[in-house]
Image (cartoon, rainbow, N blue to C red):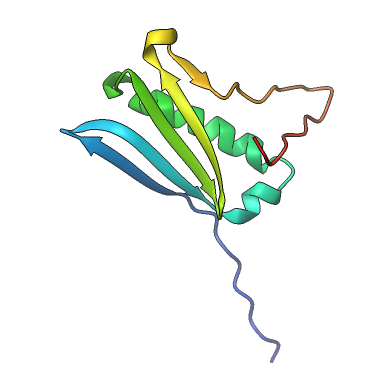
Length: 105
């Protein structure tokens, strides 16, 4: 009988930190293989921005989100006082080119 293999399931762990029921920040733990996948960082970037929209109504003036892939962390910040801008800038999209996103981002 050949040995059985288990296939991993992608999952995200979300920690939402609140102060008096108002979100102060959130941390998402991503599967480490997303970091190495060609479009993994792009997918995570889209997901993080979507998460900011979910918390937008109750978010404080400066709201921080961290995305962690193993020991690699990317810090996102929403600044309501600056026109609701999220940094770092979104990953550019192109139908004509493959956009490489460095791991250092």
